Amino acid sequence: MVWEERWHALREEWVVVAAHRQDRPWIGETVEQRAPALPDYLSDCYLCPANRRISGAKNEDYSQTFVFDNDHPCVDPSAAADLERPVGIYMNRPARGIARVVCYSPRHNLTLAELAAAEIQNLLHVWQAQYEDLGSRQEIAHVLIFENKGDVVGVSNPHPHCQIYATNFVFKHIETEARAGERHLRETGRVLFHDIIAAERQDGRRMLWENDSAIAFIPYFARYAYEVFVAPKATHSSIAAMSQVEVRDFAEVLKHVLVKFDNLWRMPFPYVMALHQAPTDGADYSGFHFHIEFHPPLRKPTLLKYLAGPEIGGGNFLSDTSPEEKADELRALPELHYKGQEYQ
Ligand SMILES: [Zn+2]
Ligand SMILES: [Zn+2]
Image 1 (cartoon, protein in one colour):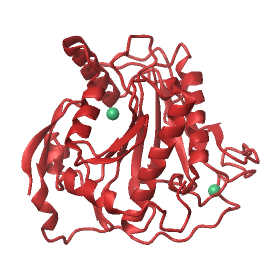
Image 2 (image 1 turned 180 degrees about the vertical axis):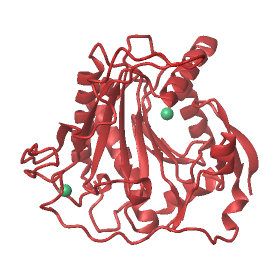
Image 3 (image 1 turned 90 degrees about the vertical axis):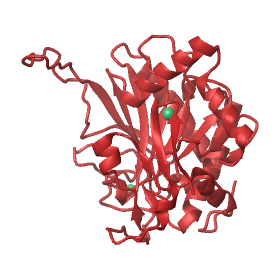
Image 4 (image 1 turned 30 degrees about the vertical axis):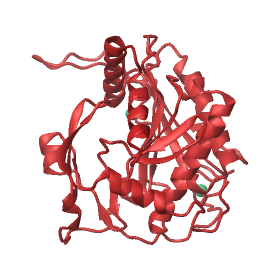
């Protein structure tokens, strides 16, 4: 049983851990556990190769990954620049950007967890190129790469893909992490994320997997039951700065984590995955350490973590589970994907 607050050094906020709450009786809503089997190809899927999208554009007949500009972008390069000023103390500013979609594979039913490590490596190279291309543009201040996976996080198309928002603003979590990292570097001379990795390795209880240059763990301050961080050990402000060898190691660790996730309940494991990378607005981000964060919304196969009174009403996360126990659970799982695919 854990009943304490833990400091989230990256978000600069406290997380309340009340780990005995998992056992309370549950009479709320549940989610469907068994995902229906999907075909390799669907003629009406707007992400499958050579299909036509709603916009009328035709997908390439692609054989690996496929990148295209989102037909329904949340951010758009043509958004108005001269906004009408609001009254009183209110402020506004133009929100502009480029939204893209990256299909992981031509196969409609092949999730990131089921890609071979070499295919994940290839995807990491695509992410590197996207960060460089979009981040180098004058009008772009940040490149957010993320995947929403599973019905429970509102995915509109099950064809495995991620999204890219390259924007003229920096998202709040990145801004906070950048500020926290900069201050830590100034005050201690050390990279904040290095100190987090060092603490995780020293404690050991939340470690999931590591190789020469990459590492995965459930952080001490995890807000979600199965929250996992994957990072290179050396500090790079973005994925683009990682070497070939680091990309290979990173893909191996990522694959390991994804297989464990799917094996947990023998189902495609839903999550929000976000690449946390330094802004591209030209400032100095030498204290920023690229990492991937997984925020899985389920606490049990049919039980969602609801954001409610403490989180939405009060503004602090209340975690019902102990990160140490959850890491134990993940570590104990097989390294072979439950669908029988060979671990590579
Ligand atoms: Zn498809
Ligand atoms: Zn982060």
